[in-house]
Image (cartoon, rainbow, N blue to C red; front, side, top):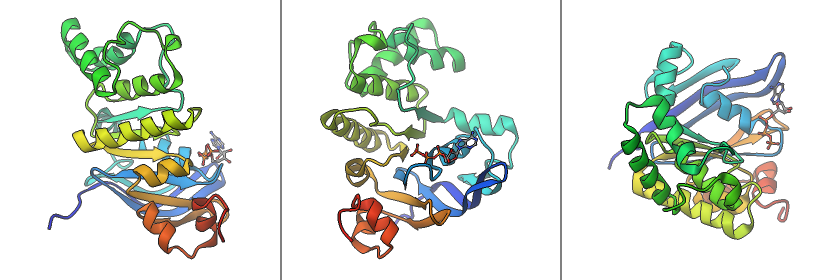
Length: 252
Ligand SMILES: Nc1ncnc2c1ncn2[C@@H]1O[C@H](COP(=O)(O)OP(=O)(O)OP(=O)(O)O)[C@@H](O)[C@H]1O
């Protein structure tokens, strides 16, 4: 049997803003190919954890490893190199409103590769097709629906063929059907490309539909109290706070 390979290992991590400690003693592993959910109530520090994992904020204490590499113990150049292999999709899709979808998706390719304009056009076409939006190259973000903007945001996050994709509340603001389609897309991309996905969300339907691994940040305890497959956690946990979160308070 093959062991799962660790993609990101978080060890004894403390996150703080100045003297305000948000969470301490976070230790968990995100394996290659996981759809890993960062779970927890409002204000527990999910987005902050993401900023630490993507290199925007240093931990107060502890380590983050990408494979064997001590991420925050490395030079800024090494961190940049690692981040070049990552894509981030923010809540709004974060597309530039004055640019067409082709220009939005082409931007990281223009910035970070030596591809010719014709090659960039080809990659853009492929990425839009990948998210089910073939033919939408010349549309502006305001001309497409919220769900399509999110898909285009994913296409842009995937422009440089990342090994890992981070999502901050991907289904925020979407109707349930569009949110479900987005979940299906995340699953499809993981299946077809093997990309590791790290998803910050408190959408229960998404958590159970797509997550195979997770961490639960308990705001009242200022630390993680569980990690693992969300469906298994729901079946087994006796922790009242986690149970409350996973059942939206509907079961004791
Ligand atoms: N730049 C900052 N400086 C100081 N405190 C901050 C900063 N950013 C966030 N915080 C505080 O840290 C706490 C955690 O914020 P964070 O956004 O990480 O939580 P979250 O779990 O993602 O919340 P939500 O689910 O509501 O988006 C909050 O109390 C917030 O006010």
